[in-house]
Length: 329
Image (cartoon, rainbow, N blue to C red):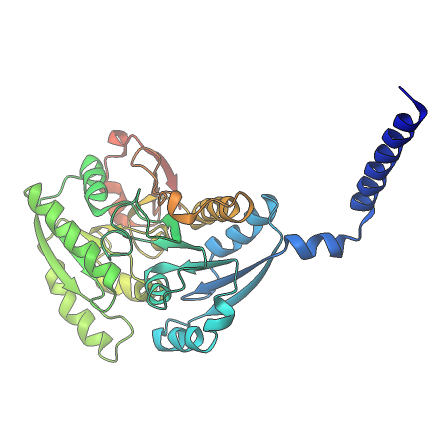
Protein backbone atom coordinates (compact mmCIF):
# COMPACT_ATOMS: atom_id res chain seq x y z
CA UNK A 1 0.00 0.00 0.00
CA UNK A 2 1.48 3.37 -1.01
CA UNK A 3 1.76 6.43 1.18
CA UNK A 4 -1.10 8.24 -0.62
CA UNK A 5 -3.60 5.45 0.19
CA UNK A 6 -2.53 5.41 3.83
CA UNK A 7 -2.95 9.18 4.01
CA UNK A 8 -6.41 9.02 2.40
CA UNK A 9 -7.61 6.35 4.82
CA UNK A 10 -6.24 8.27 7.76
CA UNK A 11 -8.08 11.39 6.59
CA UNK A 12 -11.38 9.47 6.33
CA UNK A 13 -10.91 7.99 9.80
CA UNK A 14 -10.15 11.40 11.31
CA UNK A 15 -13.23 12.87 9.64
CA UNK A 16 -15.46 10.14 11.08
CA UNK A 17 -14.00 10.62 14.54
CA UNK A 18 -14.58 14.38 14.36
CA UNK A 19 -18.22 13.87 13.31
CA UNK A 20 -18.77 11.36 16.11
CA UNK A 21 -17.28 13.78 18.61
CA UNK A 22 -19.54 16.58 17.37
CA UNK A 23 -22.61 14.37 17.80
CA UNK A 24 -21.59 13.39 21.32
CA UNK A 25 -20.71 16.91 22.38
CA UNK A 26 -23.61 18.63 20.62
CA UNK A 27 -25.79 20.71 22.99
CA UNK A 28 -28.77 18.73 24.28
CA UNK A 29 -31.10 21.47 23.06
CA UNK A 30 -29.98 20.88 19.49
CA UNK A 31 -30.47 17.13 19.83
CA UNK A 32 -33.90 17.56 21.40
CA UNK A 33 -35.09 19.86 18.63
CA UNK A 34 -35.04 16.93 16.22
CA UNK A 35 -36.58 14.46 18.68
CA UNK A 36 -39.23 16.42 20.58
CA UNK A 37 -42.71 15.35 19.50
CA UNK A 38 -45.80 17.51 19.78
CA UNK A 39 -48.76 15.76 21.40
CA UNK A 40 -52.24 17.17 21.88
CA UNK A 41 -53.98 15.62 24.90
CA UNK A 42 -57.76 16.02 24.88
CA UNK A 43 -59.71 15.02 27.98
CA UNK A 44 -63.36 15.03 28.99
CA UNK A 45 -63.31 15.53 32.75
CA UNK A 46 -59.81 16.65 33.64
CA UNK A 47 -56.60 14.67 33.97
CA UNK A 48 -57.22 11.20 35.36
CA UNK A 49 -54.71 8.56 36.52
CA UNK A 50 -54.78 7.28 32.93
CA UNK A 51 -53.23 10.51 31.63
CA UNK A 52 -50.70 10.78 34.44
CA UNK A 53 -49.63 7.19 33.74
CA UNK A 54 -49.50 7.84 29.99
CA UNK A 55 -47.19 10.84 30.41
CA UNK A 56 -44.88 9.10 32.89
CA UNK A 57 -44.60 5.90 30.87
CA UNK A 58 -44.08 7.75 27.60
CA UNK A 59 -41.03 9.41 29.13
CA UNK A 60 -39.71 6.05 30.36
CA UNK A 61 -40.03 4.71 26.83
CA UNK A 62 -37.73 7.46 25.58
CA UNK A 63 -40.28 9.77 23.97
CA UNK A 64 -39.41 13.44 24.46
CA UNK A 65 -42.77 15.13 24.11
CA UNK A 66 -44.18 18.63 24.27
CA UNK A 67 -47.73 17.96 25.49
CA UNK A 68 -50.52 20.49 25.09
CA UNK A 69 -53.59 19.70 27.19
CA UNK A 70 -57.17 20.81 26.62
CA UNK A 71 -60.05 19.68 28.83
CA UNK A 72 -63.59 19.77 27.49
CA UNK A 73 -65.13 20.03 30.95
CA UNK A 74 -67.81 17.55 29.85
CA UNK A 75 -68.96 20.08 27.24
CA UNK A 76 -68.99 18.74 23.68
CA UNK A 77 -69.75 22.18 22.22
CA UNK A 78 -66.69 23.62 23.96
CA UNK A 79 -64.55 20.79 22.62
CA UNK A 80 -65.83 21.28 19.07
CA UNK A 81 -65.14 25.01 19.30
CA UNK A 82 -61.55 24.36 20.35
CA UNK A 83 -61.02 21.90 17.51
CA UNK A 84 -62.54 24.26 14.99
CA UNK A 85 -60.45 27.25 16.11
CA UNK A 86 -57.19 25.31 16.30
CA UNK A 87 -57.67 22.93 13.38
CA UNK A 88 -54.65 24.14 11.37
CA UNK A 89 -52.36 23.84 14.40
CA UNK A 90 -53.81 20.45 15.29
CA UNK A 91 -53.07 19.09 11.82
CA UNK A 92 -49.37 19.77 12.41
CA UNK A 93 -49.24 17.72 15.64
CA UNK A 94 -47.27 14.47 15.81
CA UNK A 95 -49.99 12.69 17.80
CA UNK A 96 -53.40 13.25 19.38
CA UNK A 97 -54.36 11.47 22.62
CA UNK A 98 -58.08 11.35 23.44
CA UNK A 99 -59.85 10.25 26.62
CA UNK A 100 -63.24 8.59 26.39
CA UNK A 101 -65.81 7.91 23.73
CA UNK A 102 -67.30 11.39 23.32
CA UNK A 103 -63.93 13.11 22.88
CA UNK A 104 -62.67 10.44 20.48
CA UNK A 105 -65.79 10.54 18.32
CA UNK A 106 -65.80 14.35 18.25
CA UNK A 107 -62.19 14.44 17.03
CA UNK A 108 -63.05 11.78 14.44
CA UNK A 109 -65.71 14.10 13.02
CA UNK A 110 -63.06 16.74 12.25
CA UNK A 111 -61.25 14.44 9.81
CA UNK A 112 -57.70 14.91 11.08
CA UNK A 113 -56.72 11.67 9.37
CA UNK A 114 -53.16 12.84 8.74
CA UNK A 115 -52.44 13.01 12.48
CA UNK A 116 -51.91 9.71 14.36
CA UNK A 117 -54.48 9.28 17.14
CA UNK A 118 -54.44 7.09 20.25
CA UNK A 119 -57.61 6.87 22.32
CA UNK A 120 -57.94 5.60 25.87
CA UNK A 121 -60.72 4.60 28.29
CA UNK A 122 -63.20 3.90 25.49
CA UNK A 123 -65.75 1.31 26.57
CA UNK A 124 -66.91 -0.12 23.25
CA UNK A 125 -65.16 1.30 20.15
CA UNK A 126 -66.85 -1.23 17.88
CA UNK A 127 -70.33 -0.77 19.33
CA UNK A 128 -70.28 3.03 18.89
CA UNK A 129 -68.90 2.80 15.34
CA UNK A 130 -65.33 3.95 15.89
CA UNK A 131 -63.92 0.73 14.42
CA UNK A 132 -65.35 -2.20 12.43
CA UNK A 133 -63.47 -4.63 14.70
CA UNK A 134 -60.84 -4.51 17.44
CA UNK A 135 -58.24 -5.93 15.05
CA UNK A 136 -59.23 -3.46 12.33
CA UNK A 137 -58.89 0.10 13.66
CA UNK A 138 -59.77 2.93 11.27
CA UNK A 139 -56.97 4.53 9.32
CA UNK A 140 -54.77 6.73 11.50
CA UNK A 141 -56.20 5.63 14.84
CA UNK A 142 -55.92 2.94 17.52
CA UNK A 143 -56.19 2.83 21.28
CA UNK A 144 -56.87 1.04 24.54
CA UNK A 145 -60.32 -0.29 25.30
CA UNK A 146 -61.12 0.10 28.97
CA UNK A 147 -63.97 -2.16 29.97
CA UNK A 148 -64.64 -5.80 29.30
CA UNK A 149 -67.56 -6.46 26.99
CA UNK A 150 -71.01 -6.65 28.60
CA UNK A 151 -71.21 -10.30 27.49
CA UNK A 152 -68.00 -11.17 29.33
CA UNK A 153 -68.99 -9.12 32.38
CA UNK A 154 -72.29 -10.97 32.63
CA UNK A 155 -70.51 -14.30 32.28
CA UNK A 156 -68.02 -13.44 35.03
CA UNK A 157 -70.76 -12.11 37.30
CA UNK A 158 -72.74 -15.33 36.88
CA UNK A 159 -69.70 -17.23 38.12
CA UNK A 160 -69.67 -15.51 41.50
CA UNK A 161 -73.32 -14.51 41.80
CA UNK A 162 -75.96 -16.20 39.61
CA UNK A 163 -78.84 -13.88 38.68
CA UNK A 164 -82.29 -14.34 37.17
CA UNK A 165 -83.22 -10.66 36.87
CA UNK A 166 -80.84 -7.75 36.38
CA UNK A 167 -81.32 -4.01 35.95
CA UNK A 168 -79.03 -1.94 33.73
CA UNK A 169 -78.53 1.72 34.61
CA UNK A 170 -77.41 4.04 31.81
CA UNK A 171 -77.38 7.68 30.74
CA UNK A 172 -79.38 7.86 27.47
CA UNK A 173 -77.39 10.95 26.39
CA UNK A 174 -74.11 8.99 26.15
CA UNK A 175 -73.80 6.82 23.05
CA UNK A 176 -71.30 4.47 24.66
CA UNK A 177 -73.66 3.85 27.60
CA UNK A 178 -76.61 3.16 25.29
CA UNK A 179 -74.52 0.73 23.21
CA UNK A 180 -73.37 -1.04 26.38
CA UNK A 181 -76.92 -1.31 27.68
CA UNK A 182 -78.03 -2.76 24.32
CA UNK A 183 -75.30 -5.40 24.38
CA UNK A 184 -76.01 -6.33 27.98
CA UNK A 185 -79.70 -6.70 27.16
CA UNK A 186 -78.87 -9.04 24.28
CA UNK A 187 -76.44 -11.08 26.40
CA UNK A 188 -78.96 -11.38 29.23
CA UNK A 189 -81.67 -12.56 26.84
CA UNK A 190 -79.39 -15.30 25.50
CA UNK A 191 -78.75 -16.48 29.06
CA UNK A 192 -82.44 -16.47 29.95
CA UNK A 193 -81.97 -13.55 32.34
CA UNK A 194 -84.73 -10.95 32.60
CA UNK A 195 -83.49 -7.39 32.21
CA UNK A 196 -84.88 -4.04 33.26
CA UNK A 197 -83.49 -0.94 31.52
CA UNK A 198 -83.28 2.16 33.72
CA UNK A 199 -82.43 5.62 32.35
CA UNK A 200 -80.74 8.16 34.60
CA UNK A 201 -79.30 11.63 33.93
CA UNK A 202 -77.58 12.53 37.24
CA UNK A 203 -76.79 16.13 36.32
CA UNK A 204 -80.34 17.01 35.25
CA UNK A 205 -82.45 19.45 37.28
CA UNK A 206 -84.99 16.75 38.12
CA UNK A 207 -82.35 14.40 39.57
CA UNK A 208 -84.21 13.91 42.86
CA UNK A 209 -87.41 13.03 41.00
CA UNK A 210 -85.50 10.49 38.91
CA UNK A 211 -83.95 8.89 42.00
CA UNK A 212 -87.34 8.59 43.69
CA UNK A 213 -88.76 6.92 40.58
CA UNK A 214 -85.83 4.53 40.16
CA UNK A 215 -85.75 3.11 43.70
CA UNK A 216 -88.99 1.06 43.41
CA UNK A 217 -87.73 -0.39 40.11
CA UNK A 218 -84.95 -2.21 41.99
CA UNK A 219 -87.15 -4.02 44.48
CA UNK A 220 -87.60 -7.12 42.31
CA UNK A 221 -84.15 -7.55 40.72
CA UNK A 222 -81.21 -9.71 41.81
CA UNK A 223 -78.52 -7.25 40.74
CA UNK A 224 -77.89 -3.99 38.91
CA UNK A 225 -75.32 -3.32 36.19
CA UNK A 226 -73.99 0.25 35.97
CA UNK A 227 -72.75 1.18 32.51
CA UNK A 228 -69.62 3.21 31.88
CA UNK A 229 -70.95 6.77 31.84
CA UNK A 230 -68.86 9.88 32.43
CA UNK A 231 -71.87 11.53 34.07
CA UNK A 232 -72.06 8.70 36.61
CA UNK A 233 -68.38 9.09 37.46
CA UNK A 234 -68.74 12.87 37.79
CA UNK A 235 -71.84 12.46 39.99
CA UNK A 236 -70.93 9.23 41.76
CA UNK A 237 -72.58 10.40 44.96
CA UNK A 238 -75.96 9.78 43.29
CA UNK A 239 -75.41 6.04 42.83
CA UNK A 240 -75.69 5.05 46.53
CA UNK A 241 -78.90 7.10 46.68
CA UNK A 242 -80.42 4.76 44.10
CA UNK A 243 -78.85 1.38 44.82
CA UNK A 244 -79.83 -0.40 48.08
CA UNK A 245 -76.88 -1.48 50.23
CA UNK A 246 -77.88 -5.16 50.09
CA UNK A 247 -78.31 -5.26 46.30
CA UNK A 248 -75.35 -6.64 44.34
CA UNK A 249 -74.19 -3.96 41.94
CA UNK A 250 -71.69 -4.40 39.14
CA UNK A 251 -69.85 -1.57 37.40
CA UNK A 252 -68.23 -1.85 33.99
CA UNK A 253 -65.46 0.60 34.94
CA UNK A 254 -62.88 0.40 37.72
CA UNK A 255 -63.61 4.09 38.34
CA UNK A 256 -66.77 2.98 40.17
CA UNK A 257 -64.98 0.97 42.85
CA UNK A 258 -65.48 2.82 46.10
CA UNK A 259 -68.63 4.61 44.95
CA UNK A 260 -71.07 2.15 46.43
CA UNK A 261 -70.64 -0.42 43.66
CA UNK A 262 -70.15 -4.00 44.88
CA UNK A 263 -67.79 -5.38 42.23
CA UNK A 264 -66.00 -4.63 38.98
CA UNK A 265 -64.04 -6.86 36.64
CA UNK A 266 -61.39 -4.91 34.77
CA UNK A 267 -58.13 -3.02 35.02
CA UNK A 268 -56.93 0.18 36.62
CA UNK A 269 -56.75 3.47 34.73
CA UNK A 270 -52.98 3.48 35.30
CA UNK A 271 -52.58 0.21 33.41
CA UNK A 272 -54.56 1.52 30.46
CA UNK A 273 -52.40 4.65 30.48
CA UNK A 274 -49.26 2.53 30.20
CA UNK A 275 -50.77 0.53 27.35
CA UNK A 276 -51.71 3.70 25.46
CA UNK A 277 -48.17 5.03 25.99
CA UNK A 278 -46.66 1.87 24.51
CA UNK A 279 -48.83 2.32 21.43
CA UNK A 280 -47.86 5.97 21.12
CA UNK A 281 -44.16 5.10 21.42
CA UNK A 282 -44.41 2.58 18.59
CA UNK A 283 -46.08 5.20 16.43
CA UNK A 284 -43.65 8.00 17.26
CA UNK A 285 -40.36 6.11 17.54
CA UNK A 286 -40.85 3.12 15.26
CA UNK A 287 -43.09 4.85 12.69
CA UNK A 288 -45.74 2.14 12.98
CA UNK A 289 -49.04 3.27 11.38
CA UNK A 290 -51.70 3.43 14.13
CA UNK A 291 -54.13 1.24 12.18
CA UNK A 292 -51.51 -1.53 12.15
CA UNK A 293 -51.83 -1.76 15.94
CA UNK A 294 -54.98 -3.66 17.03
CA UNK A 295 -57.16 -1.96 19.63
CA UNK A 296 -56.02 -3.32 22.99
CA UNK A 297 -58.49 -5.13 25.22
CA UNK A 298 -57.74 -7.07 28.38
CA UNK A 299 -59.01 -10.64 28.35
CA UNK A 300 -61.40 -12.14 30.86
CA UNK A 301 -58.53 -14.15 32.36
CA UNK A 302 -56.36 -11.03 32.74
CA UNK A 303 -59.07 -9.01 34.48
CA UNK A 304 -58.90 -8.27 38.17
CA UNK A 305 -61.99 -8.68 40.33
CA UNK A 306 -62.27 -5.53 42.44
CA UNK A 307 -64.47 -5.83 45.52
CA UNK A 308 -65.82 -2.91 47.52
CA UNK A 309 -65.06 -4.22 51.01
CA UNK A 310 -67.42 -1.69 52.59
CA UNK A 311 -70.42 -2.82 50.56
CA UNK A 312 -72.92 -5.02 52.42
CA UNK A 313 -73.87 -6.93 49.29
CA UNK A 314 -70.28 -8.15 48.87
CA UNK A 315 -70.99 -10.91 51.41
CA UNK A 316 -73.37 -12.49 48.89
CA UNK A 317 -70.60 -13.18 46.36
CA UNK A 318 -69.19 -16.67 46.02
CA UNK A 319 -65.60 -15.58 45.55
CA UNK A 320 -64.30 -19.14 45.85
CA UNK A 321 -65.70 -19.67 42.34
CA UNK A 322 -63.72 -16.81 40.83
CA UNK A 323 -60.71 -17.61 38.64
CA UNK A 324 -59.65 -13.95 38.64
CA UNK A 325 -57.32 -12.25 41.07
CA UNK A 326 -59.35 -10.55 43.79
CA UNK A 327 -58.48 -7.10 45.12
CA UNK A 328 -60.38 -5.43 47.93
CA UNK A 329 -60.85 -1.69 47.80
